[in-house]
Image (cartoon, rainbow, N blue to C red; front, side, top):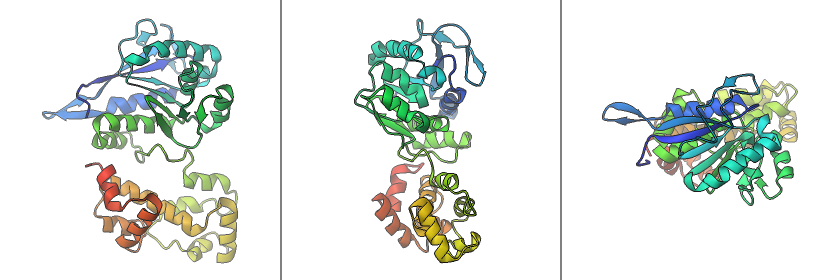
Length: 326
């Protein structure tokens, strides 16, 4: 845990920004607190910094009055640059990049949510670095800044002192990762619970979850299968049972499933069970054997073998590393 707190986090405010890219991370950092002699102490002090002193209207029309401007911003531990259509304007990106560049020595880290990366890329700060952004803008970012190594897959990426994330809710995922980096997993998981976030997701997770990919791609009777699988992991998810739900014979179901998603039903089910097991292990929900049974594995030994094959680590070691009590 960081020796000095509260740490000051600065958030840039500008016209035509995405309001959720600002509000989501701000609420996450605002909710982070540690216990000091029985009293909750805030981990962070938050500051909004406008390009000027004017009220900035977000893309949604929400009007935001910044506390500071680029000219009188206080010293910061971390700078967060939200995304939005305004940051894709070369003039705005140039102003932001020119302001950030000479201040890098005073900043411990810089985080860009969604298209906030355009502001850093405009100043050459991301040249040669691996970054991510919202998948809809990844090609444009790569085209406009060819020296940047754009990866549209992950939720967020860390490269040195620079952190970049996909849009909207991924900004919360990134914020939780930064909170964990500063104050440990217990504080980050407490924030996730307070915000009613499904889980503190790792940055390497795809922007599209497997169930969402399934539902997005499926336009026929299988469209509800993925969500049903996730909600019923402890049940019989054999090909025969799933085929019956889709009102197809097992052979037809398997063939259409593989054609649509490039994986067998069994592989998809195993992935969903592993993801849920990871979540329950991280949250400390019972023994490894209980977790295995609760997500549909026949035994803890089957879970262990599947974990080692897919993740290269045992369930016990995973809990020790990522659990709330780690």
